[in-house]
Image 1 (cartoon, rainbow, N blue to C red):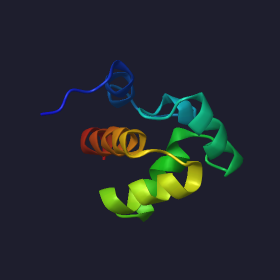
Image 2: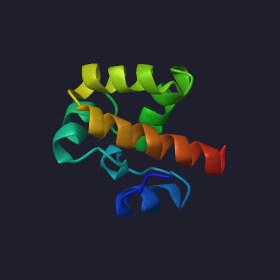
Image 3: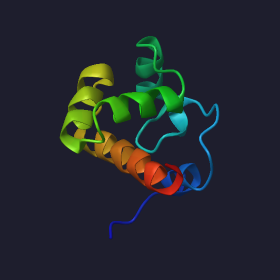
Length: 90
């Protein structure tokens, strides 16, 4: 199993609520601002896109690249964070 960041573990440890998009693993201030500009201001809005894409890693990573110019590591971290959160709470 791959190791996860503290940010990832913190996010997956509790319900999402109104957490800002920057709480997602792989999303820092720069990507967060880009996502917010595109209307993705909360983590649950990005979760919605993740679910619309049927939890498909390749499609989600491509969407993140298009939506906020995320690199492959950033989008993979965000994907894994949302996948693990879904496994825990859905």
